[in-house]
Length: 183
Image (cartoon, rainbow, N blue to C red; front, side):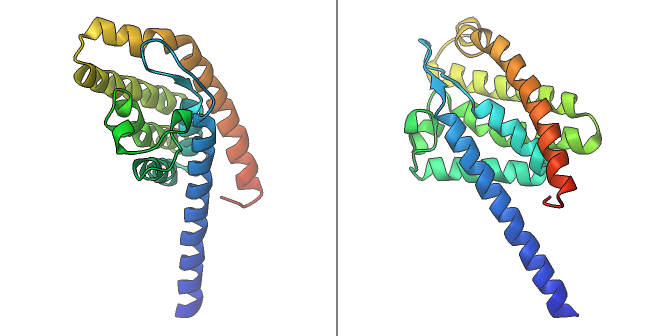
């Protein structure tokens, strides 16, 4: 009986790791769809993929997928926007946005698991903006208004669109994967 239980646990961990690695790859691919903006903070589809990880995989696996993505980038793999990698990206002006991604995925996952998906999505996005903007202020040696102008205001319309899209896609994909007994 123990060998069956150990095999089931091992295969479950392996499956979880595969899901996390697959979502880390999805985030890396969507990070390459990037529009550079003058203030140095690009518009990317990472913030569509990160909450999707939480919505589809749940809070724990979603956050783990994002951590895998960040670790891959930190060691130099070109997974960040513009095919960049390296610890210097995480420590740069946009590093706060990246570092807050696990929180964003966790909040989305918690939201869907608790029946409050939209609250989780909004909380994750707000957390991402707060951490990213504060980090930008420190690294760029700037005040609140210039940071809001560079990091928040130009992104509000697309952030709303990405939240709605990730919520709708997340529900559909999660339901389909659950029905197929893949999650």
